[in-house]
Each structure stands twice: as C-alpha cells, then as structure tokens.
Amino acid sequence: MNILFACSEAFPFIKTGGLGDVAYALPEALKKLGDDVRLVLPAYRGVLEASDKIVELGEFMVKGFSVSYSFRLLQVTKKSYDTDVYLIDIPELYDRAGSPYCDEAGEPWMDNTERFVVFSQAVSLLTQCFTELESGNKWTVDVVHCNDWQTGLVPAFLKASGSSVKSIFTIHNLAYDGLFNYESFMQLDLPKEWWSGEFIEFYGSASMLKSAMIFSNSVTTVSPNYAHEICTEKLGLRFDGVLRSLGDKFSGILNGIDLDEWNPQNDPYIQQNYSTGKQVASSKRANKFALLKGTKLPQEDKPLLGFIGRLVEQKGIALICEILPELFKATNVSIIILGSGQSNYENELKKLAKTWPERLHLHIGYSESLAHRIEAGSDIFLMPSKFEPCGLNQMYSLRYGTLPVVNNTGGLADTVVNATLSTFKNNTASGFVMKNSDANSLLVCINTALELYTDKARWKQLQNTAMKKNSGWIKSAKAYRKLYAKKPAKTGKNSPEKVSQ
Ligand code: ADP
Ligand code: GLC
Image 1 (cartoon, protein in one colour):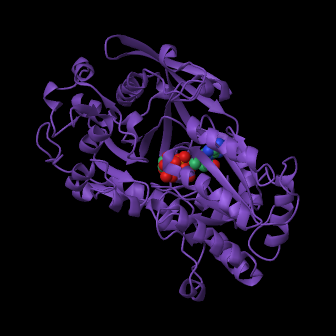
Image 2: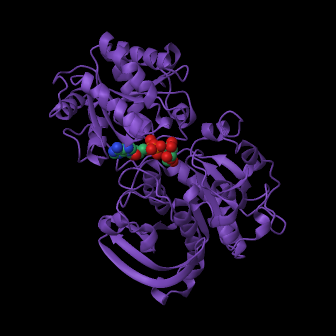
C-alpha cells in the first residue's frame, strides 16, 4: 500500500518529543512489512539544515485565512535514512529559528493555527499533486496517516475536495485541540454548514482535533488504556462524547519503540554496551560513572534516579519537585534531570539544584546523547505523569534495565507491571506503579524501589524481565495495516457520523 505519513515533526530531522520518534519508527516498521511509506513535513529551518540533499519537485498554491500562499514541494534526503521525505516549503510560515511550535524564548508562535491549517490543506492537495509531477516522481496515495491536531484538517480538506484517498488519524495527545474561531473558519474553503456541532464546531470554536475525529476513516490513539480513559468524562477533555460516538471507528494501538535506535547492546552514545544477562550490573555501573563524571554528584555507586522529558504539567514535574527535598533528607539517592519547557518548572528545578548541588544534576535543554546516557546509567527512571497517552521513555527504560516508577495512567499502565509478590512469582514484574497520582504515592513507590535495589537477586530478576519485554513496532504496525486496508464505512453526503458533543 502507498501511505503518506503526515506529521509536524520526525526524527532524525526534527524532534521535540515522542511524536517525532513515532514518525520515524512506525514508517520504518511498515516498510519492513512491504508498504511504500513516505513522509511529509513542513519545511522548518531545522529540517532544511538537517537535510543532505534538497530537490524541488513543483510549485502549488494553497489558501490561508486571509491570504494565499504559494508553496514549493521539496524532496529531501539524509544519509543513513532511506524513507522518501517531502517538505511543504512556505518560508514565511516555517523558515524560522526556534522549534516547530515555539519561538526561541519558548513562546508558541502567534500564527500556529494558520501555519498548520495551511500545512493540512497542502497535505490534502499533495495527494493529488503527486499524479501531476514529472514521470519519475509520480505516485498514487492510498491512505494518508495524519497525526495530532497539526494535521487535523487534512481529512476535512480531502472530503471537501471529493477525494477518494482514505485517511486515518492518530491522537498522540488529546490535550492539544487546535482551536480557531468562527471568522477564521469562514475564510477557509470548507462547506459553511460544517460549522456545526455535528462536524467541526466545538463549544463555540472550530477544533482541528474534532474535525479529524469526524472526517477520518479511522481514529486511533497510542495505547488501549488511554483510548478507554479518554472516552470517559473525567479524562476526555470534553471530547469524550465525540469519541464514544465513533464506536469501532476508534481504537487504541500501543506505540512501539525503535529497537535499533534504543538498544543498549550497540548504543553508540554509551560508555559500555550490554544486554540481558550477567554483565548488566557491571555495565550499568560503568555507564553510571561515565554519566556522573563532570557533575557535582558523588562519584559513587549509590542509587541514581533519572528523568527525561518536556517540563510541562502532563509529566508530573510538580510531584517530583515536591518530593525531592524529603527524598534527599531520608535517603542517599541522587537524580539527573534532562528537560526543557514551562519556565515555572525550569525555575523551580533550578532552585532545587542550587539547594542540593550534590544530589540533583539539572540539564535544561535538549540532548539526544544525554538522553541515551541517562537511560543507560541510571538505576531508576521517574515518570509520574498526570496523564500519558503512551509514553516512550518508560519503554526505553525497560529495555535499558533502568526500572521505571510510573503513575497508573494511560500507556504507562499498559507497559509497566508493578512489582508485587504475585508478579515476582509469575515473572512479570518490571517496575513500580503508583497507587494514586500524588506525592505520597510517588515517594512510597520510590522507597519500594530503593528497598528492592538492595536485594541484588530480585533487582536482577526485575531487570531481566524488563529488558526481555518485546516492545518493537511490528505488532502495532500490523494493526495499523489492518486499518489502512479496511473498507470505508458508508456514510451519507457530508455526514460522517452522528455526533453527540
Ligand atoms: P512526549 O511525547 O509526551 O514528550 P514520550 O515519552 O512519548 O513523551 O517521548 C519523549 C521523547 O522525547 C523521548 O524520545 C525522549 O527521550 C525525548 N526527549 C524529551 N525531552 C528531551 C530532552 N530534553 N532531550 C532529549 N530528548 C528528550
Ligand atoms: C505524545 C504523548 C506521549 C506519546 C507520544 C507518541 O507526545 O504525550 O505519551 O508517547 O505522543 O505517541
């Protein structure tokens, strides 16, 4: 099948979080199963800089809210990466310093809505443009796989243009809803009657996320547990009614991890490679000492905690900040934190690092290499997220024998098995799951982990189980292929499903 994978970020070109990892690893897995998968991204400055060769394939027009944009369709290549990648090049929208979503000060770009409405429209147009390209570049798209709100309007634009290309939409995070107002909606080339609760209108605004739910042929999210959670009023962020009304058009498919990129056996970033078996403890110790080097933390083999992630409310940073002083007073642990995000969390962590320079090493910023070294050198990984659609870091941690402490939510609950007497007995225990989403539960969980850490035999058993867990992509890629091949449900003109908002 020919699949166009539309996304707002993708490793190794540009990545801010797990979405970038998925946009790399899922297409790779689908290609192994025989599909022709090609990627389309906005031509951000960072992507152009990360590309080795850039070829222009054509020039097209697309309409924004009040002006039209001409875009160049580029094809780029990068050494040791063989997926075809297309870029929508509109310099006034994408050629900027900063991240895909924020300026250099970390503030969201003011025109983000227009940037991604235009991107969505260009992707929809692209499915037709391929056939107009010079013969060598001609291609037919069977399915567009869209991801998160930034591509949320693709299915609506496809529908409005009468296209027969199928679309599937994956929700990586329901918290980002892509809202815009009535005036902007009216400026788009979409049927005006779609401004209605049955279609795109969502509590007085238009939502790109809701639009995708309505107009895609299939909707997925990134773990079965999160799929269940967001159909409830408690965690559905007002989308639960829409999601429930989708019936079996909506499902949860667990993310995998790229087993080559995240492999302690041949990870080029780490001091000593290792795999399940005897040398785990000694190799992890060597990696710990390499990680501690250059920090003010004691250069000793004491329990080391790790955290990597976006410093946003979702990730449970407030809980970590709350418990650290007590943890430092009561135990001998140290922690390494790598992340960037909201200034309130960055500042609070900076204060803690100043108060506890020999216990907390803080790296504000983004570092692929440090992320790998933290996974290999820490003993315990903290991921007390308030909610977590899937989460990849806990899976990387399992693979690196760095036992995760996680909240009982979303994909974390689907991937980590709490260490209890019975899960020890049946050899499924792989980490520590918090009872409640609060500071006390986090502290209790860390203390349980620290207690087991001193029991070398049991710790080894946990590491073995964790490291042997197969979290690769193939099973999930097969589930996506089933959806790609599914016959579209018959619906009336302009009316996908009856929706209760
Ligand atoms: P989310 O997508 O919500 O941010 P995930 O756990 O799914 O969370 O994925 C996060 C990905 O981003 C992981 O690959 C993680 O290593 C990476 N990451 C997050 N913050 C940083 C950072 N500051 N430096 C390096 N990698 C990071
Ligand atoms: C989102 C989610 C995260 C998920 C990632 C990839 O950013 O927050 O839980 O793992 O997307 O699907």
